[in-house]
Image (cartoon, rainbow, N blue to C red; front, side, top):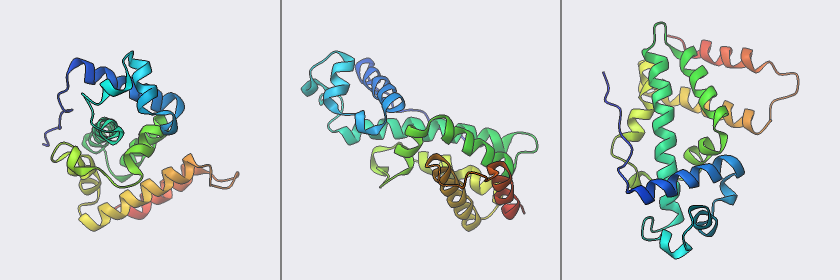
Length: 177
């Protein structure tokens, strides 16, 4: 049994800032998430944000932390459930990414601010891939398949006549033990 990491404890004002940042991110995308815009949404002056988060990247790290925790919970539930395996893991991954595409992109694009995340969060969130495959290298390959498929789907890069359900099933079948 694995222990689920918890979100970093924050002051009430910092939690409000992260909530507002997430709302902006999910409603309008990462380009709309500026410190000035965030301050206006929270009802404070932009310089006051820096008392709680030293940089915009720190705000983004708090959002990445939430995204990784939520994704990890969904993936652990998929592999812990009765009959959970590669296919259920991929279904949960796809559903989580497609439900919150802006948060997914923020959490998976560009360098990961590991130093700003709770220790063990990244490993815990990725552990279901190992649990589903039983091998660290196959787990990385399975994650790469899932991430690549999701990004292609989010970017509408599959041909119009693609049956994505069948494509995801084929990907799962390729990784079944």
